[in-house]
Image (cartoon, rainbow, N blue to C red; front, side):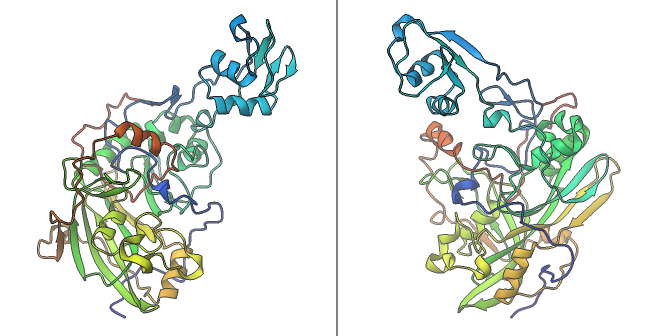
Amino acid sequence: MTRSNNPVSSTGTRNSNKDYSPSDDPADALGSDSLDDDLDGEALAPQELPGSVPTVASKAVDNSPRIVSVPDDLAGERLDKVLAKVFPEFSRNRLQGWIEAERVRVDGTPGKIRQPVPLGATIELVPDLLPEQLAFTPEPVPLEIVYEDDTLVVINKPAGMVVHPAAGNWSGTMLNGLLHRYGEAAAGLPRAGIVHRLDKETSGLMVVARTLEAQTDLVRQLQARTVKRRYLALVWGNMPDEGTIDAPIGRDPRERTRMAVVKSASGKPARTHFRRVDSAIWQRQPVSAIHCDLETGRTHQIRVHCAHIGHPLLGDPVYGRARGKRSVTPLPDGFARQALHAWRLGLIHPQTGREMQWRAEVPEDMAVLSAALGLGRDEAGEFDETYYEDEEAEGYELEDDDALDAEDDDQDDDGAEEHDSDEDDSEEDDSEEDDSEEDAPDQDERA
């Protein structure tokens, strides 16, 4: 075993996953079309989801009864087909569900999907609330608060929690919990104050703004790279002592629900600095514990970069096959998520200007996994500014043959985006930084 500098601790505060379950769908990693997990000024501007669903602040939802007289030319057709024509704003599947739930009456009698609609019939529909209409409502989602003041809050997110509502995860998200905890103050902010994201199955620290001024400042800090985030990752293989992975990331042109290292213009610059803090042999396979510091913030950056150099994260259901069979070997105690934890966070307080840092102990599932693998448990030191500036550290530079040829990466965007909308959210995401030159939102912008 090599030097041990791992923050895994057998004592102290641990996260509990009892309220959240690991995703059954490995593609939950892409819940949005953005290539970034850190939000920029444009992303914080007021916007709405399809169907006029507000981003945060809720609008009145019209679920009052709707009554129509059936046109003569539709008489005799099946009820579900008639409904699809007279209520085109709802999908046929949803209308069929409402028929089965007895939310549709024909001349005062509960309807049947296949029944013919008589001439001159009157149909009454009582819509149920759509999942996306319930998405931006307060819910008592438990949040582990690490630090809180009037300007910002630091949260230790457990694995299994989605940060922001999206298709497949319309409720139970961190945003829902923020709306419940902070009420109108959070509802008046873009995305309830969220400025960056973590993947659903990634645990660790996140900062959330409590005022628009703080949100604007934090977005600018992310762009200026004064927000420091350090991750603990457990990977396959013997990683070098330290280095930098410098390789652009974009959508995988061969499988557009994934990200990949790409060499075309569609790839966005991405840099990950790493240090090995421990290594061990488990079942005749080398494993390493590494610290990763992000210089940029692309979706799945750590996971993609580590897989790209042949050291995928243990348990990663999306990128874990880069080393063949051993990367999908069942892990101890049924560990079944990417072994990634955002354990250190540092920033300049938007109000006081003070440098502040926080730490989140490694969650119990990763601590148990580390112990079973034989990895050490000593704490690491403070953030090292020279670490970001060390030009002599061993690095991985992108070679033309290493990247995917993404010259067709811009094809079929519409279809890919539609497909992505069916996946679970991950906001996922390895919490990553946006290099956009877009300005942060004006202080009078609201969601």
